[in-house]
Length: 425
Image: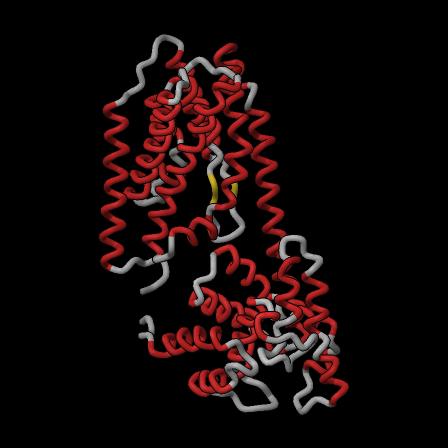
């Protein structure tokens, strides 16, 4: 099964789920059309335009080229002002993106998005009313906190869960991992926009459209702040990439080694069932595991023959150097130990500190196996390349001495499965 391509059974489940959301969303829109009077129709149109504009300026995410909509503020405010049906229609129609209008998105995805957004807003509005909220009467008082908070939370949960569930089926990932990997960054957006939306609804209820238009500038400022937050993470990833390139420029023999270790590390971590957020940090640490070689002389790194004792001691300093570099990266500092100890042995005979067993961080024990496997199966001028079967046998031979037996067991399962898996044509 290729990543992103569901197996037949999963494809059937995905199609059934998408159809259910489309039908349920359409039913809600048809059964509960907005019932407004006079100028409220003009106000609803303005909020529809505000939603469309907000949808046209999403926050771009650092991984996978995706984006997150910032239209929650206007949809939530519409729910508070006119109730479930009006909120559902604003969510369903106002969120249409230019790519969808241009035919760049498949019709089933367009309809699914319309359906799940209509359900998210409609059900959130129903929760608001059931808990005592009165559309059009926005009270900023203690007794109104529960319906306001429950409304926003319901929209968030239904909106995110419906999308996460569909993506998890399509990509064959656990729902929890899909959420942690792709959507945990959405939480700050909702936290920041909720009070802004409540205040927008309150101002509109007293000053009409003019008050709503006054919120365009604060919204732009809030969106800019959230994009800066995401851009900071992108800069962080770019810094990691630049550091790796600096190391590989010094050591031509191991060019591509960091990427291979990253891939093997992720395979092993998934086989061990580690949480997605832990795997993500481990991914960055595996990319940077040899960053300390930037402090080792090129003549040593490129030496084709056997190293002298003095040269070997200099090579052995690279984990500590790497840890000191990683420690200065604010978002990855907690993984400094993973980098420092990836050459420790399970029996305590490794370096730099002679840790053993579970004294060695789990991430370091995983990277140790991934690092060794790639080194054994890659070209080196000072020894012959092993076959994958030979490298697997060597991992098993060193299980319990150099490597953690549980990690070797998981790695062997992964590498053996990769050997026997049919190749894509």
